[in-house]
Image (cartoon, rainbow over all chains, first blue to last red):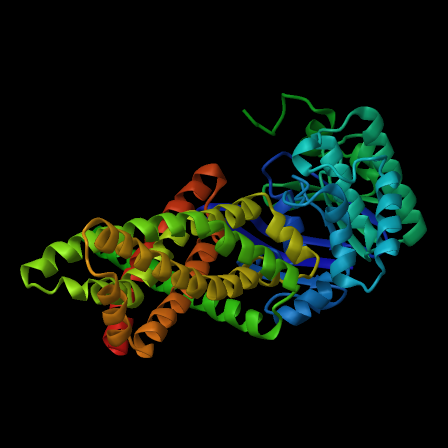
Length: 248
Length: 256
């Protein structure tokens, strides 16, 4: 379980998180939706300790991760996998080395074992014969899939997905959603997915939270969100230009 | 008036915070290098990048520096009828001062800027965040190997600079201007002592620390986007060069 309590975070004079409270239940898939620039990625980075709040609490499985010594924070991070919005692949390495990196650094597996694990992981995300390519030779969608393979490889207990399917074609998008659903069913990890894929994301998420103006506006099951009477939530999921959310 | 005081206060706090952060960065880099230097392959790669790939520029600058010293030294020493001391003048200038300083400035321009740009790009593309989320210490992969490599490479490059520079001076002094070749090397042997050599190496070693420290720091805490990386790279080269010259003065006053 991940718990954020009354979290405030500002960058300069701009308050991004403004008293945010959320509980991410263990073993379930929770989707975070909300307009662009509302702090969804910032919220994810608080969960893994990449950002520290100006005030508030962040707990992972009952442990307050703020002000933890580095070694303890790393022990908590061992439980996590994360897929970044921009993939965050190491651009000085090829695809194989990118995916193999956590295995090489954190396990004592043999070279052959690592090789077979990497190839299987890449095949699971629909990539074949790309091991020797460098990241600048890949399309945006391929980069995301390599990053997904890297995030899933160590079978973490908690996986944070920051827009895992943005920029992918509809078929790959469906395949990635299905992959998340299947691997979740297999391993039962806790997943937090920041996504703009509405309504597709409702098919895989057990819970959906809508972030708006630095707080959780509504939290519930996908059905609760779909049938919400809140005008902001309704406008957002219908994608209407008219309504209380003024983006332009 | 209040605005001016506020501005001065803000700038002072920012400056002190920056100093503190730089101090913490150096401490963390050194403690990681000592306690957990990581895969030797990473250190060898950096040794190749900082050291071996700087050889051409070191040869070039050392050769011409020695040649200029030969010319200037000959011009000055002939006024006193002491052109036989040319070898000593060239060697002492290079070994004590110019070798360590110029080789460090060359490495700053060639490798230091690249180090800042590399780490800066990794920062803005979240590659450093990715390392942290894997519970891996970015210092072990990005900073410590560069620090160790710079500490090894700089004294070696300095030694090469000294030798090439001395032969540059010999080329001009002996081959072009007719100084006695025996006197050039004999006087050098007589006047250069071991203390001159190791003081040059101590300088080079500490310049290696400065280059890796400042250039890694500027990349690690770079600003936003391409402009942020470009600004950090410029700042890294300028700050490193200034620190090398300032530190050189203090070190010289201690080692003399």
